[in-house]
Each structure stands twice: as C-alpha cells, then as structure tokens.
Image 1 (cartoon, each protein chain N blue to C red):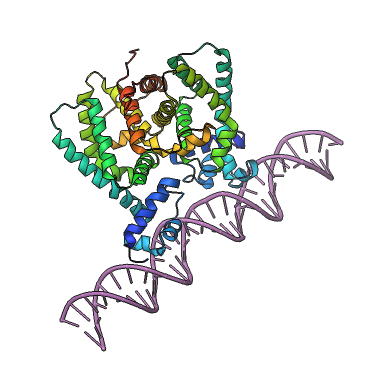
Image 2: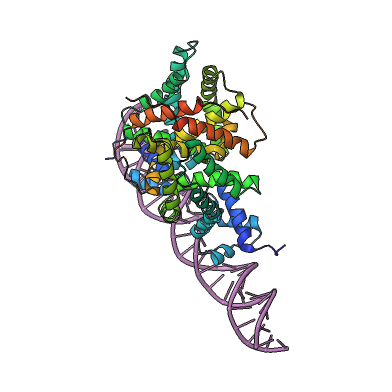
Length: 210
Length: 210
DNA sequence: GTCTCCCGCAAACAAACGTTTGAAACGTAT
DNA sequence: ATACGTTTCAAACGTTTGTTTGCGGGAGAC
C-alpha cells in the first residue's frame, strides 16, 4: 500500500479535509493519519503547513488557469457575449477535473475558502500567481457588459463570485438549516447550468439608477 | 476604565475579531487582551468559547429576527412581490444596526461564517433558534415566485444567500486580488441597493429549460 | 562490498490553545 | 464594622498544535 507516491497521497487527503473543515481546523496529524503517511512527511516534502496549503491550490489552479488562458486566447477579439464568457469559465472548471465529479465540489469549496479565509500570505500568493488571469477575465467581462458603470460592474462581479463559491460549498448547511426534503442526488453539471442562469440574470439586471 | 460592562466588552471585541479572522483562528487570549479583561472572564461569564460564539450570534440575530418577524406579520397576506420581500429583509438588517455602520459589515461577515464554517453544534443551534423565521421567509418567497420549480427556487435561494453573505464579507479580498483602483469609501446602503438588484435579477432570470 | 543520497519512522520539542483553580478585591446589606 | 455573594486576577492545568530531531533501511553508482 506504500506504493503510491507519498506527496500525492498527502495532497489528495489534504484537499478533502481542507474542503470539509477549513484550514485552521484541519491538523497535520489528521491529514497524515488519514493519508497513511508519517507525520513528519508533510514538513519534509512541503516545508510547512502553509506551503502545503499553497501546494494544494497550485495543483488545481495551475491546470485550470492554464486551460482558461489558452481558451481565452482562442476566443480573443470575438467580443464574447456575457453568457459565452461565463460558460467558458465554468466549462473550463468542469473540464479540468472532469474525471472525478467529487473534485468539482472540492474545487468550488476551496475557492470559497481561499476567497474568505485568505489572510496575508495566502492573499499575496494568489494575487502574484493568478492575478493576471483574473485581470484578463475582467477585461473580457468589461467588453461583454458595456452598459454597466464601473462601480456596478465591480459589485456585480463581487456578488457573482459569492454566489459561485457558495454554490457547492455550503450545500450541506442549507440542507440542514431548512427542514425541507429537497434534492438528494445532485449533478454538478445541472447545478452549474442553474448557477449560470442566476449569475447572468444578476449581472444583466436592470439598474434602477438612484 | 473598568466601568464598562465586562460581558459587553468581550462581546464587542469578539464579534470584531471573529469577523476579521474566523472562529478557530481567533484565540480567547486575543479577545481578552484586546478587550482589556482577564483571560478567565470568558469562561466565567459564558462557560466556554463555543458558548461565547453563540452569544455573539444571539446578540445580533435576536433583534434582527424579532423585528423581521413583526414586519412579516404586518405585511401578511399582502402577496408581496419579490422585490418588496427582499427589501423587507435587507431594510430590517440595516435598521437593526443602524447606529453603527461598521456593525452592518460585521453582520454580513458573521452570517457568512455561520453559513460556511458552521460545524455540528453551531448548525444545530442556528436551526433550532432561527429555523422558524427562515422557514417563514421561504414560504413568502415561494408565493412571490410562483413560476419557479421547487428545484430552481432551492438553488437560486442558495445562490442569493451566497451573494449576500459574501457581499461585505470578502470586500477586502476582492480589492486586494485585483490591482484596480476602485471605490475606497463604501456606503452600506448603496451596496445594499446594488445587491438587491443583482439578487432580484438572478432569481428572476429566465430558465433555459434543458 | 561500500559509500551516498533519499525517504520513512517514532519520538520529542517548544509554543499556543481552552479551561480550571484559589485567592484577592469588590460592592452591598445587615 | 462585619459578613456575604459576585467579580477579577495571576498562575497553572492538561491537550493539542506545527515543527524538528536522529536513527534506520533501501536503491543505485562506483
């Protein structure tokens, strides 16, 4: 059973536990024991817990941002509609981890955590590594929504990010807080379609100029 | 300087620190030292750290839910439109903490944390205490959106909650990740209006039935 | 063989955590 | 003034945290 790469076993276990309970609430001992590796392996291979967190993000943000960038290059100067642009991003997110449907949920959840819990080090790391891709997306989105004022666009992007990162992250919480009996089996693609409708509708909403 | 109530000083400091860094990342020592009280005061007055967290939530959820419920009673059987219903909730949130504009941001941030980080105990506490109010709101919203299927409504409420709780919570994060020079001074009422437009637009979005 | 480099392992480390303790200080009623 | 219940305080409690330490084993080069 020790055949599988230790580094990958740690990353696999860490991203699941981080997504379930957050970064501070997940101890290295919980990760290593569940992964079946020695406690010292984390500090040996990654250096520190914080470096492990960054490694987890790199492993799923690098393929995602890479593929997103090439697809943005392909559809350059096409003046994408808002729906096509949003679809491009979401399809890229789904394609990157197509093999494992569970990893899509983890992807959303970790994105939400990065956005919410990001403190100091993590925030700088994300901006330096992936700020450029985000900036290109914002540029395309600006072209796709010419009628919005910069202030409106800023906030609506903000709201859309919130809706997106919460999409799959807090699913259990919502199911728990409402006694309702609601969908048990959930297909990521289906949720993704509904999310796109919601976000596009929100960004497209008429502005009741004050 | 010891004249102010110790309990309130703890609550004031705790809600700020919790909103800034999360629950697990905020130690009792950080709270008590910043509040200028003794470390043991938390366990003496509240019993445990978890009880302190619940007390923080009760202090701003009780007035909010109370006022929301009376306002719901007043406008019962009026068949509220979606916009009026959403406006009712948001105006109640603003009115409850009108005196301090900073507390509105804390209110949103804590709501987001409760929704995201809620584990076990906390989740049960919120449902038992405030599940009824949430259920009434859902009932009114169902009446306001008769064309939506239950599945669509479920997810769009979910997305709307995500957009809302993220609204003021991750503001700094978004400002940090994008190098853009964007609004420095932000008025909660203004953000609230934009959020309402976005959420209403998202919930009202046409469903491209598959 | 032997040397070397890389990795896994149990054990221990200092620091920080939430919590508990027992005594001192407080205001108040008798 | 004395006595009593409540609150505050410094100090210590036992755990758990992230990190470090030597030791041992196994694969490849010479």
